[in-house]
Image: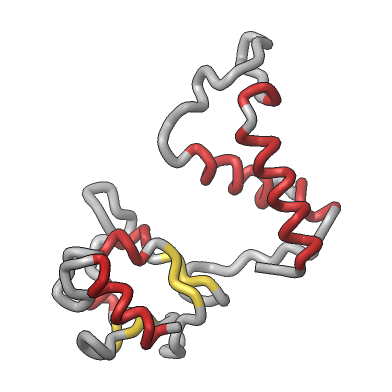
Length: 140
């Protein structure tokens, strides 16, 4: 999220990070050796944010999960989830389908929900992609 110019700067730098010609391996070679795992773009994103690299070009603000304009809920899902309870148990899901919504920790409706697709097979969000989209129409 940000201004047009900030988004263009970010897009430029993230595409540079994901271009195998620009990566240098531990042995000094160029290429994508060692950088082919699914989700590696998240690592590049984190490096750009937490190294301070983007601070030279834009005002970067970091929010804790559930406290900012984007609520990333992917950490609540899967065998390796960091948060060991469901969205329902944490009280993040408010209401029932088709009127369910995701809330930030303060109880306000989350303006943007990232990684909600991980929860397609839950009863709250129905069990189909279209069902999730139908629920999300009430969220956004």
